[in-house]
Length: 400
Ligand code: MG
Image (cartoon, rainbow, N blue to C red; front, side, top):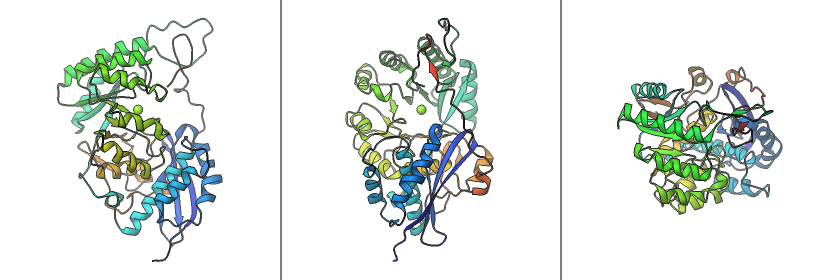
């Protein structure tokens, strides 16, 4: 078989539904054969485009497309400095595109290359929300009517809405929240929703690393009676040592990982059995290659996968998640964001969700394509992000 090489790489940006998305297209020396990958880092997308165009592309051109593992290993160390966002996003896009190409060459979906299916479809969870406990319960019921059995419940966005904030004179503008009021309101909301829907639905909640570590431990303990499927990001990556404390205090299942970059972040949590779900952004951690390693590693410790899957994972990234989900023996759950119909037109083959399960297309590779003409009708809008300008009641900056 003649060697097929990387001939060109295009970095496509588009913003069809809120988030700025980055798609990497690897064009090969074989006419008509190309692969797609997701490199999305929506808040700093221009940096990823430059990393790919100016640095990774010259490194990749001419390489043998069959050598995915070798390219990934070399790609991660080639810049000497490693394990950070931006470069890892660019590498993720290239890695996913190479898996897509390998699948197309084999005439098989990527899940077949990983070892084959453990399941026919991936159970997904949707995002229910509202501004009152009653409104959240209504939103949950709507998801249940649409076949969802796993539902994340948030009230008033991340950190919630506060009514008691007293700011100092001259406090700057920003996305204010009150950690104390947040925990009180969320406990009320979670208790209400559980009492409304009974045991029929699995409920999830995302703290989004908004609390001081000891308050997060307390919260995990207080929600224990409401049987969450998992509590997400209770602590920040900067506070990993607190997971041990949380574990000693309660058995609320914990999900963590979307902000992780470095293996030193996830290794101790998995090996220490300090979390229950590992949920990196596959388009940020370096792609399918490292995600496959992590899933196998986590499987040894009884930790399940729950890859990051909101709107700032592109449709191509969701397809990559799904192939991992179908294969992984330790698959737990898949986050899902319900793309509007026009996004299905831009990305033919975008996985479909029916009755709470996500199904792949029957095409080889990742099974998804991009209509570049349509995508170009939704150019990325540059803006200074507001919701990440998060402040505590006294105005001091905090994590979003
Ligand atoms: Mg999250």
